[in-house]
Length: 299
Ligand code: CP
Image (cartoon, rainbow, N blue to C red; front, side, top):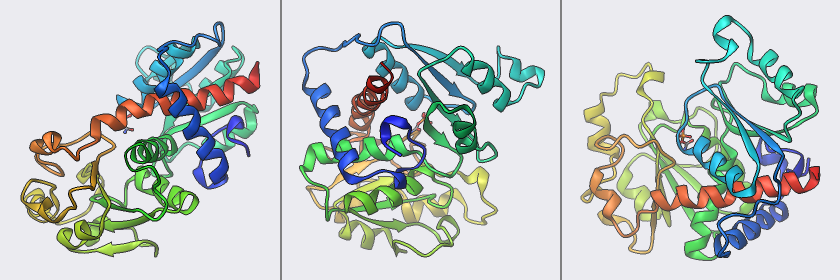
């Protein structure tokens, strides 16, 4: 499926398509014009059935800059979901208003692929349970390549709650396409059961290996683990002491939201290698490029 027809999982897309998307995002980044309202009068349905700050506002900003009107559903409050209407029926009704694209965040219990097929509309996965978060992985790599030119062969260490992370799941797919290496680091109960990337038990060893490190939010609410936060902080927190072995040219990422004091010490934000807020900035350009590719097809 070409990316202009939707983005549910990265494994369905090619290196050529993704690199083309990065080129478009870079052109937007380098453009002096903040607004390109070429899609005035079109609508995009932003349906966030689960909470979001970065992804929702990033897509809203991208829509505003393109002249697309965002139809926003943010949680059940104020909608007929609280009267018992299903997500599926909500989407079917909105389809009758004919938005050009659906941008959806939902849980694992909802079948995004099935509704995309049923409606025949273009869908973007804006964070689907633990399946994946493709635009996050794309913006991470777009941001990364803007600092290192070429990420092929580079090494990304993902630290923390990998088992429950849709971001880690999307990086596993994207690494296969773009040719960077992914390794995981965390306590055994935070790691996926499936075979795959290299695993570092010790943070210090992983950091020595890495060209970039991405910390993830600890989702203790999802674990049956006996590990306490104190143990996690002692063994896996990124702070000035633990990152001493990280190369001076390596970059530090986090998809957000960050629990400062747990997976990251607040002082990391001041580290010259930290790119957390740059990720957010690049996310708007990347999402603007993605919407542009999709909307050009619908004109
Ligand atoms: N990175 C990310 O998806 O953040 P939000 O949950 O705030 O959208």
